Amino acid sequence: MNRKRYAVVGGGINGLAVARQLLLDEPGASVTVFEKEGAVAQHQSSHNSGVVHAGLYYEPGGLKARLCRRGVELVRRYCLENAIPYDECGKVVVALDEQELPRLDAIHKKAVANGVPGVRLVGKEELREIEPNCIGIRALHSPHTAIVSYGEVARHIAREIEARGGSIRLNAPVRRLIERGSSVHVELDSGEVDAREFDYAIACSGLQSDRLAQQSGDAATPRIVPFFGQYYVIDEAFKNHVKGLIYPVPDPRFPFLGVHFTKRIDGQMTIGPNAFISLGRENYDGKRLNLRDVADFLAYPGFWKFASKNLRATLRELKTVASESVFVREAARYVPSLADVAVTPAVRGIRAQAMQRDGALVDDFVIRRQGNVTHIRNAPSPGATSSLAIAEYIVRDVLHRQ
Image (cartoon, rainbow, N blue to C red; front, side, top):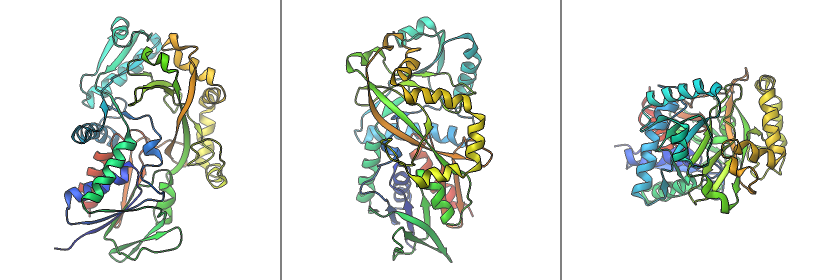
Protein backbone atom coordinates (compact mmCIF):
# COMPACT_ATOMS: atom_id res chain seq x y z
CA MET A 1 0.00 0.00 0.00
CA ASN A 2 1.36 3.41 -0.96
CA ARG A 3 2.11 5.73 1.95
CA LYS A 4 0.53 9.06 1.09
CA ARG A 5 2.55 12.22 1.71
CA TYR A 6 0.85 15.42 2.85
CA ALA A 7 2.17 18.95 3.32
CA VAL A 8 0.16 21.30 5.52
CA VAL A 9 1.07 24.99 5.42
CA GLY A 10 0.32 26.88 8.63
CA GLY A 11 0.79 25.93 12.27
CA GLY A 12 -2.33 27.68 13.54
CA ILE A 13 -5.28 25.77 14.91
CA ASN A 14 -6.75 25.06 11.47
CA GLY A 15 -3.55 23.73 9.94
CA LEU A 16 -2.77 21.66 13.01
CA ALA A 17 -6.31 20.27 13.08
CA VAL A 18 -5.98 19.20 9.43
CA ALA A 19 -2.65 17.49 10.10
CA ARG A 20 -4.10 15.67 13.11
CA GLN A 21 -7.15 14.53 11.13
CA LEU A 22 -4.94 13.15 8.36
CA LEU A 23 -3.03 11.08 10.91
CA LEU A 24 -6.26 9.89 12.54
CA ASP A 25 -7.81 8.79 9.24
CA GLU A 26 -4.58 7.52 7.66
CA PRO A 27 -2.25 6.37 10.46
CA GLY A 28 0.45 5.36 7.97
CA ALA A 29 0.52 8.70 6.15
CA SER A 30 3.50 11.04 6.10
CA VAL A 31 2.34 14.46 7.33
CA THR A 32 4.55 17.55 7.54
CA VAL A 33 3.38 20.93 8.86
CA PHE A 34 5.29 24.00 7.65
CA GLU A 35 5.09 26.93 10.08
CA LYS A 36 6.85 30.24 9.47
CA GLU A 37 7.25 31.17 13.16
CA GLY A 38 9.45 29.59 15.82
CA ALA A 39 6.40 28.11 17.56
CA VAL A 40 2.85 27.13 16.63
CA ALA A 41 -0.30 29.21 17.23
CA GLN A 42 1.43 32.59 17.10
CA HIS A 43 -1.21 34.45 15.10
CA GLN A 44 -5.02 34.28 15.08
CA SER A 45 -5.06 31.12 17.22
CA SER A 46 -3.69 33.03 20.22
CA HIS A 47 -5.14 36.47 19.40
CA ASN A 48 -8.88 35.94 19.74
CA SER A 49 -11.74 36.07 22.23
CA GLY A 50 -11.60 32.38 23.12
CA VAL A 51 -15.35 31.98 22.57
CA VAL A 52 -16.64 28.58 21.47
CA HIS A 53 -19.49 29.88 19.32
CA ALA A 54 -22.76 27.96 19.45
CA GLY A 55 -23.95 28.81 15.92
CA LEU A 56 -26.48 31.58 16.53
CA TYR A 57 -25.90 33.89 13.59
CA TYR A 58 -25.02 31.74 10.61
CA GLU A 59 -27.19 31.03 7.60
CA PRO A 60 -28.74 27.57 8.04
CA GLY A 61 -27.24 25.05 5.63
CA GLY A 62 -24.07 27.06 4.99
CA LEU A 63 -20.59 25.79 5.80
CA LYS A 64 -20.30 28.12 8.79
CA ALA A 65 -23.49 26.81 10.36
CA ARG A 66 -22.74 23.14 9.69
CA LEU A 67 -19.08 23.18 10.67
CA CYS A 68 -19.61 25.44 13.69
CA ARG A 69 -22.18 23.08 15.22
CA ARG A 70 -20.00 20.03 14.53
CA GLY A 71 -16.94 21.95 15.70
CA VAL A 72 -18.47 22.82 19.07
CA GLU A 73 -18.99 19.14 19.85
CA LEU A 74 -15.49 18.20 18.72
CA VAL A 75 -13.77 21.00 20.65
CA ARG A 76 -15.75 20.25 23.80
CA ARG A 77 -14.91 16.55 23.57
CA TYR A 78 -11.25 17.24 22.82
CA CYS A 79 -10.92 19.51 25.84
CA LEU A 80 -12.69 17.00 28.08
CA GLU A 81 -10.51 14.10 26.93
CA ASN A 82 -7.29 16.08 27.30
CA ALA A 83 -8.02 17.98 30.54
CA ILE A 84 -8.00 21.37 28.78
CA PRO A 85 -10.09 24.00 30.65
CA TYR A 86 -13.49 24.51 29.02
CA ASP A 87 -16.20 26.70 30.57
CA GLU A 88 -19.84 26.71 29.42
CA CYS A 89 -20.41 30.17 30.88
CA GLY A 90 -23.36 30.95 28.59
CA LYS A 91 -24.19 33.97 26.47
CA VAL A 92 -26.98 36.51 26.14
CA VAL A 93 -27.66 38.61 23.04
CA VAL A 94 -29.44 41.66 24.43
CA ALA A 95 -32.02 43.95 22.81
CA LEU A 96 -32.04 47.43 24.34
CA ASP A 97 -35.11 48.76 22.51
CA GLU A 98 -38.13 47.75 20.44
CA GLN A 99 -36.35 48.36 17.13
CA GLU A 100 -33.94 45.52 17.86
CA LEU A 101 -36.62 42.92 18.61
CA PRO A 102 -37.28 41.77 15.00
CA ARG A 103 -33.54 41.23 14.52
CA LEU A 104 -33.35 39.31 17.79
CA ASP A 105 -36.26 37.10 16.67
CA ALA A 106 -34.47 36.44 13.37
CA ILE A 107 -31.33 35.30 15.24
CA HIS A 108 -33.47 33.01 17.38
CA LYS A 109 -34.97 31.40 14.26
CA LYS A 110 -31.51 30.83 12.77
CA ALA A 111 -30.23 29.37 16.03
CA VAL A 112 -33.14 26.94 16.24
CA ALA A 113 -32.68 25.97 12.58
CA ASN A 114 -28.99 25.34 13.27
CA GLY A 115 -29.80 23.05 16.19
CA VAL A 116 -28.25 25.21 18.91
CA PRO A 117 -29.13 23.41 22.17
CA GLY A 118 -31.11 25.17 24.89
CA VAL A 119 -31.38 28.47 23.04
CA ARG A 120 -34.46 30.56 23.94
CA LEU A 121 -35.80 34.08 24.23
CA VAL A 122 -36.08 35.55 27.74
CA GLY A 123 -37.73 38.69 29.11
CA LYS A 124 -36.03 41.40 31.12
CA GLU A 125 -36.83 39.77 34.48
CA GLU A 126 -35.23 36.46 33.48
CA LEU A 127 -32.35 38.33 31.87
CA ARG A 128 -31.64 39.86 35.29
CA GLU A 129 -31.59 36.36 36.80
CA ILE A 130 -28.97 35.28 34.26
CA GLU A 131 -26.97 38.54 34.28
CA PRO A 132 -28.01 40.58 37.36
CA ASN A 133 -26.32 43.80 36.21
CA CYS A 134 -27.43 43.71 32.58
CA ILE A 135 -30.27 45.86 31.28
CA GLY A 136 -32.40 45.11 28.23
CA ILE A 137 -36.00 44.50 27.27
CA ARG A 138 -35.43 41.01 25.87
CA ALA A 139 -32.53 38.67 25.23
CA LEU A 140 -31.57 35.48 23.48
CA HIS A 141 -29.98 33.06 25.96
CA SER A 142 -27.51 30.44 24.74
CA PRO A 143 -26.61 28.51 27.90
CA HIS A 144 -24.02 26.25 26.28
CA THR A 145 -21.88 28.91 24.60
CA ALA A 146 -18.42 28.36 26.07
CA ILE A 147 -14.91 29.75 26.39
CA VAL A 148 -11.53 28.11 26.00
CA SER A 149 -7.90 28.95 25.21
CA TYR A 150 -7.50 28.12 21.53
CA GLY A 151 -3.77 28.66 21.86
CA GLU A 152 -3.64 25.89 24.44
CA VAL A 153 -5.81 23.64 22.28
CA ALA A 154 -3.52 24.25 19.29
CA ARG A 155 -0.36 23.50 21.27
CA HIS A 156 -1.87 20.26 22.54
CA ILE A 157 -2.79 19.24 18.98
CA ALA A 158 0.80 19.98 17.90
CA ARG A 159 2.14 17.59 20.55
CA GLU A 160 -0.37 14.97 19.43
CA ILE A 161 0.73 15.32 15.79
CA GLU A 162 4.32 14.56 16.73
CA ALA A 163 3.25 11.69 18.99
CA ARG A 164 1.37 10.17 16.05
CA GLY A 165 4.45 10.36 13.81
CA GLY A 166 3.85 13.65 12.03
CA SER A 167 6.45 16.39 11.86
CA ILE A 168 6.29 20.15 12.34
CA ARG A 169 8.93 22.20 10.59
CA LEU A 170 9.26 25.58 12.34
CA ASN A 171 10.86 28.76 10.96
CA ALA A 172 9.81 27.62 7.49
CA PRO A 173 7.75 30.33 5.74
CA VAL A 174 6.27 29.01 2.48
CA ARG A 175 6.34 31.18 -0.63
CA ARG A 176 4.36 28.92 -2.96
CA LEU A 177 3.17 25.42 -3.69
CA ILE A 178 4.21 24.01 -7.06
CA GLU A 179 2.43 21.16 -8.83
CA ARG A 180 4.61 19.04 -11.11
CA GLY A 181 2.65 16.18 -12.60
CA SER A 182 1.03 14.32 -9.73
CA SER A 183 3.39 15.75 -7.10
CA VAL A 184 3.40 18.95 -5.06
CA HIS A 185 6.61 20.75 -4.11
CA VAL A 186 6.95 23.27 -1.29
CA GLU A 187 9.07 26.36 -1.99
CA LEU A 188 10.13 28.42 1.02
CA ASP A 189 10.64 32.19 1.16
CA SER A 190 14.39 31.59 1.07
CA GLY A 191 14.04 30.01 -2.37
CA GLU A 192 14.75 26.56 -1.00
CA VAL A 193 12.50 23.84 -2.36
CA ASP A 194 11.88 21.13 0.20
CA ALA A 195 13.55 17.95 -0.97
CA ARG A 196 10.41 15.88 -0.46
CA GLU A 197 7.63 15.41 -2.97
CA PHE A 198 4.09 15.47 -1.61
CA ASP A 199 0.93 13.90 -2.98
CA TYR A 200 -1.28 16.65 -1.55
CA ALA A 201 -0.88 20.05 0.07
CA ILE A 202 -3.36 21.91 2.24
CA ALA A 203 -2.73 25.62 2.84
CA CYS A 204 -4.13 27.05 6.07
CA SER A 205 -2.23 30.31 6.12
CA GLY A 206 -4.74 32.70 7.65
CA LEU A 207 -3.71 36.31 7.18
CA GLN A 208 -1.45 35.36 4.27
CA SER A 209 -3.88 32.93 2.63
CA ASP A 210 -4.67 35.03 -0.45
CA ARG A 211 -1.00 35.69 -1.21
CA LEU A 212 0.02 32.05 -0.92
CA ALA A 213 -2.97 30.98 -2.99
CA GLN A 214 -2.27 33.45 -5.80
CA GLN A 215 1.46 32.70 -5.83
CA SER A 216 0.54 29.01 -6.09
CA GLY A 217 -1.66 29.57 -9.15
CA ASP A 218 -5.07 30.08 -7.54
CA ALA A 219 -7.37 33.05 -8.20
CA ALA A 220 -6.46 36.56 -7.02
CA THR A 221 -9.76 36.99 -5.19
CA PRO A 222 -11.11 37.05 -2.61
CA ARG A 223 -8.44 39.32 -1.12
CA ILE A 224 -7.59 39.45 2.58
CA VAL A 225 -8.17 42.90 4.09
CA PRO A 226 -7.02 42.97 7.75
CA PHE A 227 -9.16 44.49 10.50
CA PHE A 228 -7.82 44.69 14.04
CA GLY A 229 -9.94 44.21 17.14
CA GLN A 230 -8.67 45.49 20.50
CA TYR A 231 -9.78 43.89 23.76
CA TYR A 232 -9.50 45.46 27.22
CA VAL A 233 -9.46 43.69 30.60
CA ILE A 234 -11.63 45.42 33.19
CA ASP A 235 -10.50 46.14 36.74
CA GLU A 236 -10.46 42.78 38.53
CA ALA A 237 -12.53 44.18 41.41
CA PHE A 238 -15.45 44.55 38.95
CA LYS A 239 -15.10 41.32 36.96
CA ASN A 240 -18.03 39.65 38.73
CA HIS A 241 -20.43 42.30 37.44
CA VAL A 242 -20.74 40.04 34.39
CA LYS A 243 -21.21 36.27 34.70
CA GLY A 244 -20.62 35.12 31.15
CA LEU A 245 -20.89 36.71 27.71
CA ILE A 246 -23.07 39.74 26.89
CA TYR A 247 -23.45 40.63 23.20
CA PRO A 248 -25.40 43.30 21.31
CA VAL A 249 -27.97 42.53 18.64
CA PRO A 250 -26.08 42.89 15.33
CA ASP A 251 -27.00 46.01 13.38
CA PRO A 252 -27.25 45.34 9.61
CA ARG A 253 -25.98 48.87 8.93
CA PHE A 254 -22.58 47.86 10.31
CA PRO A 255 -20.34 45.09 8.97
CA PHE A 256 -19.04 44.01 12.39
CA LEU A 257 -20.73 43.06 15.63
CA GLY A 258 -19.83 45.85 18.04
CA VAL A 259 -18.33 45.99 21.53
CA HIS A 260 -19.37 43.28 23.99
CA PHE A 261 -18.38 41.59 27.27
CA THR A 262 -16.40 38.37 27.08
CA LYS A 263 -15.26 36.26 30.00
CA ARG A 264 -11.82 34.67 29.56
CA ILE A 265 -10.88 31.15 30.54
CA ASP A 266 -8.52 32.59 33.19
CA GLY A 267 -11.53 34.23 34.89
CA GLN A 268 -10.83 37.79 33.80
CA MET A 269 -13.54 39.85 32.07
CA THR A 270 -12.83 41.69 28.83
CA ILE A 271 -14.57 44.37 26.80
CA GLY A 272 -14.15 44.33 23.05
CA PRO A 273 -13.44 44.21 20.29
CA ASN A 274 -13.70 47.27 18.12
CA ALA A 275 -13.03 46.73 14.40
CA PHE A 276 -10.83 49.02 12.34
CA ILE A 277 -8.49 48.68 9.40
CA SER A 278 -5.08 47.39 10.47
CA LEU A 279 -1.86 48.97 9.20
CA GLY A 280 -0.32 45.51 8.99
CA ARG A 281 -1.58 41.98 8.66
CA GLU A 282 0.42 40.96 11.72
CA ASN A 283 0.53 44.29 13.56
CA TYR A 284 -0.53 42.92 16.94
CA ASP A 285 0.94 45.70 19.06
CA GLY A 286 -0.55 48.45 16.89
CA LYS A 287 2.79 50.22 16.64
CA ARG A 288 4.19 48.95 13.38
CA LEU A 289 3.38 50.03 9.84
CA ASN A 290 3.73 47.43 7.09
CA LEU A 291 3.91 49.34 3.82
CA ARG A 292 3.30 46.27 1.68
CA ASP A 293 0.13 45.38 3.59
CA VAL A 294 -1.19 48.94 3.47
CA ALA A 295 -0.39 49.25 -0.23
CA ASP A 296 -2.22 46.00 -0.88
CA PHE A 297 -5.55 47.16 0.49
CA LEU A 298 -5.20 50.73 -0.78
CA ALA A 299 -4.68 49.40 -4.30
CA TYR A 300 -7.62 47.02 -4.08
CA PRO A 301 -10.86 48.38 -5.60
CA GLY A 302 -12.91 46.31 -3.20
CA PHE A 303 -11.52 48.17 -0.19
CA TRP A 304 -12.64 51.58 -1.48
CA LYS A 305 -16.08 50.25 -2.39
CA PHE A 306 -16.38 48.76 1.10
CA ALA A 307 -15.22 52.02 2.71
CA SER A 308 -17.65 54.16 0.73
CA LYS A 309 -20.56 51.96 1.83
CA ASN A 310 -19.52 51.92 5.49
CA LEU A 311 -18.61 55.50 6.36
CA ARG A 312 -20.99 55.55 9.33
CA ALA A 313 -19.52 52.32 10.72
CA THR A 314 -16.01 53.70 10.23
CA LEU A 315 -16.82 56.79 12.30
CA ARG A 316 -18.39 54.65 15.03
CA GLU A 317 -15.35 52.39 15.28
CA LEU A 318 -12.90 55.28 15.05
CA LYS A 319 -14.38 56.76 18.23
CA THR A 320 -13.72 53.55 20.16
CA VAL A 321 -10.19 53.32 18.74
CA ALA A 322 -9.37 56.90 19.73
CA SER A 323 -10.86 56.87 23.23
CA GLU A 324 -10.90 54.16 25.90
CA SER A 325 -13.67 56.00 27.73
CA VAL A 326 -15.91 55.94 24.63
CA PHE A 327 -15.09 52.26 24.25
CA VAL A 328 -16.14 51.54 27.85
CA ARG A 329 -19.28 53.69 27.59
CA GLU A 330 -20.37 51.75 24.52
CA ALA A 331 -20.18 48.49 26.46
CA ALA A 332 -21.76 50.05 29.57
CA ARG A 333 -25.00 50.59 27.66
CA TYR A 334 -25.60 46.95 28.61
CA VAL A 335 -24.07 47.00 32.11
CA PRO A 336 -24.41 50.57 33.49
CA SER A 337 -22.54 49.71 36.70
CA LEU A 338 -19.36 49.49 34.62
CA ALA A 339 -19.64 52.94 33.03
CA ASP A 340 -16.52 54.24 34.76
CA VAL A 341 -14.55 51.01 35.20
CA ALA A 342 -10.80 51.13 34.64
CA VAL A 343 -9.49 48.99 31.78
CA THR A 344 -6.11 47.69 30.64
CA PRO A 345 -5.27 46.87 27.00
CA ALA A 346 -5.21 43.12 26.46
CA VAL A 347 -4.95 41.00 23.34
CA ARG A 348 -5.31 42.58 19.91
CA GLY A 349 -6.59 40.27 17.24
CA ILE A 350 -6.44 40.75 13.49
CA ARG A 351 -9.30 39.33 11.47
CA ALA A 352 -8.27 37.75 8.17
CA GLN A 353 -11.36 39.00 6.38
CA ALA A 354 -11.80 38.00 2.76
CA MET A 355 -13.28 40.71 0.55
CA GLN A 356 -14.57 40.60 -3.01
CA ARG A 357 -13.72 43.16 -5.70
CA ASP A 358 -17.16 44.73 -5.28
CA GLY A 359 -16.45 45.48 -1.61
CA ALA A 360 -18.62 42.69 -0.23
CA LEU A 361 -17.26 40.83 2.78
CA VAL A 362 -17.20 37.09 2.22
CA ASP A 363 -19.50 35.69 4.87
CA ASP A 364 -19.11 31.92 4.59
CA PHE A 365 -15.98 29.81 4.80
CA VAL A 366 -14.17 29.50 1.46
CA ILE A 367 -12.27 26.23 1.01
CA ARG A 368 -11.12 25.59 -2.53
CA ARG A 369 -9.24 22.69 -4.11
CA GLN A 370 -7.33 23.02 -7.37
CA GLY A 371 -5.53 19.90 -8.52
CA ASN A 372 -3.76 18.42 -5.51
CA VAL A 373 -3.62 21.70 -3.60
CA THR A 374 -6.38 22.89 -1.26
CA HIS A 375 -6.54 26.45 0.10
CA ILE A 376 -8.57 27.77 3.01
CA ARG A 377 -9.31 31.22 1.56
CA ASN A 378 -11.66 32.49 4.27
CA ALA A 379 -12.12 31.18 7.81
CA PRO A 380 -12.81 34.07 10.20
CA SER A 381 -14.98 33.62 13.29
CA PRO A 382 -16.13 30.94 14.00
CA GLY A 383 -13.02 29.50 12.36
CA ALA A 384 -11.38 28.43 15.61
CA THR A 385 -14.63 26.93 16.96
CA SER A 386 -15.01 25.04 13.68
CA SER A 387 -11.36 24.01 13.33
CA LEU A 388 -11.72 20.29 14.08
CA ALA A 389 -14.82 20.13 11.88
CA ILE A 390 -13.09 22.07 9.08
CA ALA A 391 -10.34 19.44 9.29
CA GLU A 392 -12.86 16.61 8.95
CA TYR A 393 -14.49 18.35 6.01
CA ILE A 394 -11.19 18.89 4.17
CA VAL A 395 -9.78 15.42 4.83
CA ARG A 396 -13.00 13.43 4.28
CA ASP A 397 -14.78 15.50 1.63
CA VAL A 398 -12.58 18.00 -0.21
CA LEU A 399 -9.53 15.76 -0.68
CA HIS A 400 -11.66 12.93 -2.03
CA ARG A 401 -13.35 15.02 -4.73
CA GLN A 402 -12.23 14.14 -8.22
